[in-house]
Image (cartoon, rainbow, N blue to C red; front, side):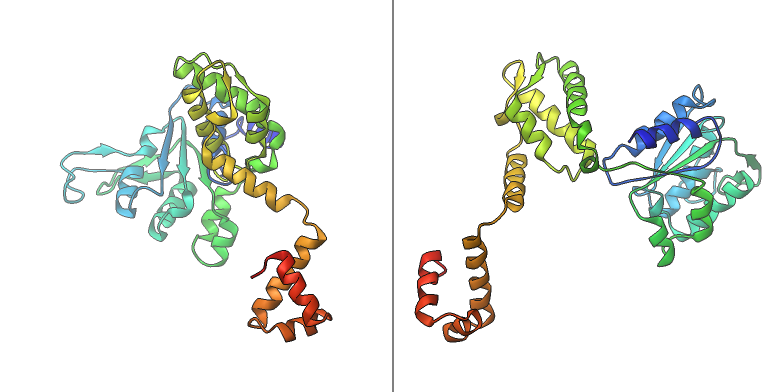
Length: 298
């Protein structure tokens, strides 16, 4: 994570295109905002658009704007996000969801640093920093033809990968305390600490939703806590169940448990034929029946 932040800080002094990659919830948008805040454009607009939530035709209108009469319903001229981001930074979230046509038009804008509104003829010069975010492996998307290779290379001038939370477990304590203070202030709660059992549970969880999920868990705990401490019972029941299941998977099995599992698999594979099962195991049928009874396999 230090490497990602260090690279973001170094690149912020330039106008190079940046591609930020990582799983959902790791904080790609926060890193984009960090780059903007450290750049010479920090006093200018930071404009974000979610490419996954808008259909292709609406996306183009949002990006480039449109002139009155450009299409049905265009009753007035409207500036697009690129114009709104002039002198500042535009962040394209979920860039992999762009349609093929939108990819081609975006490539032209990046190459020429200019664009026209839909239905317009006036060329508008673009002066904005471009940051793209994705949780998709764009290199793989290029290979299967879902993303333009030339656009990928244009966006991928600087690639910053934000690691998932499971790869940075050492950050959990500080993140938990950060979210605790943030949500205690937001909800006017006097929660100040996390008990050791609750902290152990929070640290053991894998967080498939990454930092966003951790923030939601801590916020809920802050709201339901009855005192100054977050206790284990203040955490979601699903989190406790997931940790218990995970610990059971990680717990080494005894020889008896492994033998019981193997015999069970053999019985299933032989269709319950105990003679064949005993033969494979190299034991007598009587011995097999004893093991079946001991392990309660029937």
